[in-house]
Amino acid sequence: MGIAELAAVAVATAMPFLGQVANGAAEKLGQKAVETSGQVAGWIRLRARGETAVALAELEAKSGDTEVQARLEAALVQQLEASPEEVAELQTILQVGPVINVDNREGLFNTGAMTGVVIGSNNSIRIGK
Image (cartoon, rainbow, N blue to C red; front, side):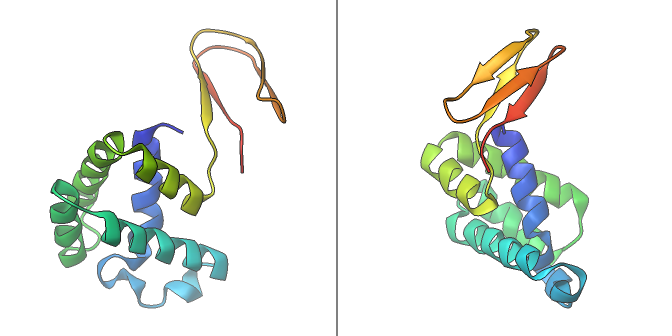
């Protein structure tokens, strides 16, 4: 999973706990989803700095604003690009593994423990949890 996708998934996952949306989240989502959503929201709040912190504060004030949500995603992408250790932390919380991006190739890819077959072009395989 690329950094942009990771940031988008993180923000979307955290949305029930950003701003006023948290009320009744447990009833709408399953317990595991609520736990993960809360963990990601907490991680974003703890790690947010610079433009990420500004966008987060604005989103919490204007929950549901898709433009502000997009700014938070973009700021988080920049923050994650500068911090590989934060990428690893977020991947662990979201329980996502690395992705092998395949550009215009077909073939068999083996990571040692798992194997994937790619047919076509511009495909991705997620190997991990």
